Image 1 (cartoon, helix red, strand yellow):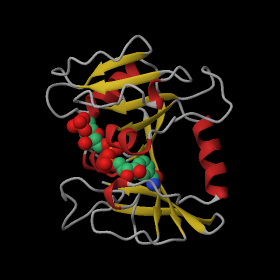
Image 2: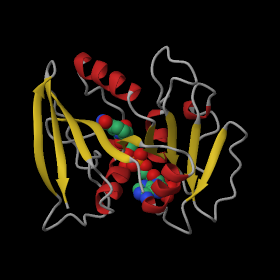
Image 3: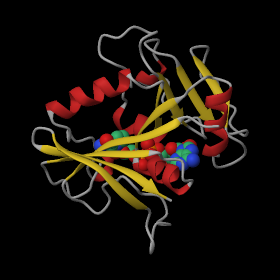
Length: 211
Ligand SMILES: NC(=O)c1ccc[n+]([C@@H]2O[C@H](COP(=O)([O-])OP(=O)(O)OC[C@H]3O[C@@H](n4cnc5c(N)ncnc54)[C@H](OP(=O)(O)O)[C@@H]3O)[C@@H](O)[C@H]2O)c1
């Protein structure tokens, strides 16, 4: 039992999620931003890694939505690295922090803490807990590259949508949608293209993984 997992991200036309040093870059068109806002309204939860929280300090909320209307925010953080002033720790939406058994960090009373085993967080176990104990039926994984790669490696992605924006970012250290340790080579993860749609100065590609 696991929630339906949609990976949704935006990359440049040269396949980068952000700039060198993980500097945030505006990639989505206005049309794509409207799409993402509407998408968030239909999902129970949004998940990111602590790398994204440190790099971008996102709210992970819907503009003008109440606490109850916002999806649950989930952050993977095994070492308690979320900065105390991070926006994901504010009171605008329910927040879950997924950590491991060894982490002793106290994030305060605003958050629910889930343990994903010892050492590296076991995503399969975590998704089971999210579905069974917290009633999360569907979720968007928004990034970054390390987290998306882990979801693919564990064959947990049900749909992958990527907005390809009309810009180049460049940089050999710039993150991509499937970073990690390169397990993809040589076979890769096969994807079946479901749709391609022009959204302003870019295109939204939606795929179903074929594991
Ligand atoms: N364009 C887009 O759509 C988009 C969206 C999101 C982010 N981004 C960009 O992506 C970059 C951040 O990506 P990132 O790769 O550095 O960080 P990330 O994927 O957001 O977070 C990676 C961290 O998550 C933690 N983690 C815990 N369990 C994990 C698991 N099972 N698998 C993978 N990670 C796990 C690890 O830190 P611990 O070991 O400390 O737990 C890991 O270092 C930023 O530049 C941001 O701007 C772009």
